[in-house]
Image: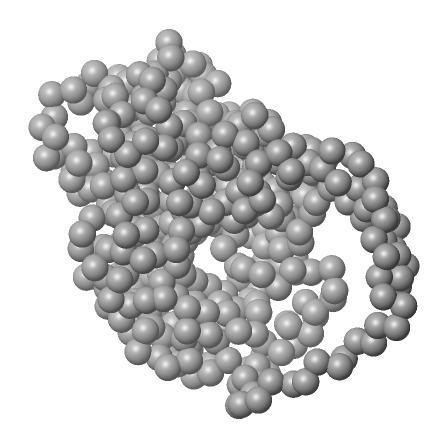
Length: 426
Ligand code: SF4
């Protein structure tokens, strides 16, 4: 059965997604209350059986020991096709027995974040920016989560003492100009706590940019309300990246949430994890990227799925990722094409991977291939000398913290992108 939601034009702000019959009678004021969605999440086999025709494999997985946490909002469950075991939204949140499989290269901490954690919850790999993990909780839980080593585990949650230490570390690190708040999902913590944290960060003079990485608007779009927008607007520049994987996630409710954020002056980006059998096709990615742009959300990163425990069956070949970028570049608006990256195991940072458009290169000549396969030649100047641009006037940026300089030196190999630190978390 095709879910009703697919009849709603994607990216259109008016209208509502269809609800599962189980929640048809819930008053609209409750349904669109983000707290109602959180308190009515489904997690147990007996609960999920009522709304989804579970397969034997899913039933077995839901009963497994040491299962990565399950918790799904009624809103997101209503988007799932309960009759189709291959529904791309269902496979992201309903466990399968393949989650328990071992595979070559499987790691508990795929990006070696723990090695770069000077203070609990601070991941500091690059000189001028860092990640601040503020919670282990999420709105719902993705089966491929790269931070499953602590995400979903209440015993590993962060609290005021951790946040104080994190803020102290940032305050004492004058080279940090960009802080990414993530987790877990930062929009799942109490609103007054989030406001406090953002305000404390904004009060640190050298923190220029605050970024938030979240998937909450996909699982519970009602979380984007006036109060949240006011908090963000009062602390600009605040950027927000939404983790979104499939066009079926782009509902009118999500479109409205994005519109509110845009009106509050928050630049929006999207990060997507490439997932086998879910979004590993040019057709799906083209639709996702073009619809995101219609919603004023710029596709930012397409992540190769990390080799994290539980996610082996979601990984694609790297060839597939390159094929997808080849199918996007030149075929859709340039800024709708995300950067395809592999987060290098061992903590080496994100490495951009792309089709080979540069066929040959010498100092004065480049042979190029365009998106349509046509070959051309670029002639460079014969007398070009590098290094003639005058240095900038004004104060020099602060020197990196010595501890970080060591890591930075290791990362400064030219093929590494010193871009951003999100990972597939949130
Ligand atoms: S991928 Fe993000 S939203 Fe999903 S479970 Fe992990 S931290 Fe939470």
